[in-house]
Image 1 (cartoon, one colour):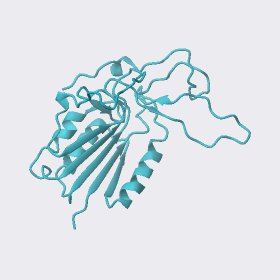
Image 2 (cartoon, one colour):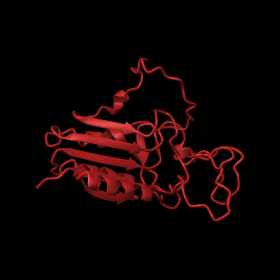
Image 3 (cartoon, one colour):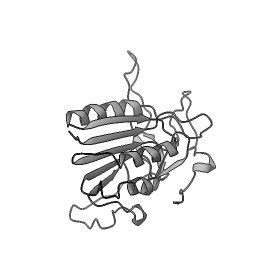
Length: 217
């Protein structure tokens, strides 16, 4: 009997020589998602630390496998606008991933993509909103056209960092951690502690290969 399927693709450790930083906690998040989605009746598969090309090949295969009513995918990694990065540091373009599912087999099925990644290097200062305001400006960019019956949800708005909060049990008698939430695109903020415990005086950006907007192909 066909079942709804969920695909969890997460990168926590990048290959040696790749300038992107490790993503602590990514494995824990995947395990929680696996538990929740399994309870909801999904058949869940986890794929960790795939290269860019391996990610493309995985989604191409998945787009041709049978599914009952719904296919759900989570992509969790460092990212930029329009892409996430494989464990080898190569960009995985979301438009190409979505395009795999634009076929007769998947067209009548519901498709959900959750993108847990940064979409740029800016810091969102926040805005005041009116519940009756116009939300027309919040839309998926045209070049990320998605197939019919597809929902795409992001962890942040375009061009902006995604933040995560450090977790962990403090040592007995220790003060609560005072580090700010951590940006998840390989950057550090002023005052944020490095893995060695020292404070960074200035924000540190990735190597030039990953700076700025990544052009779509």
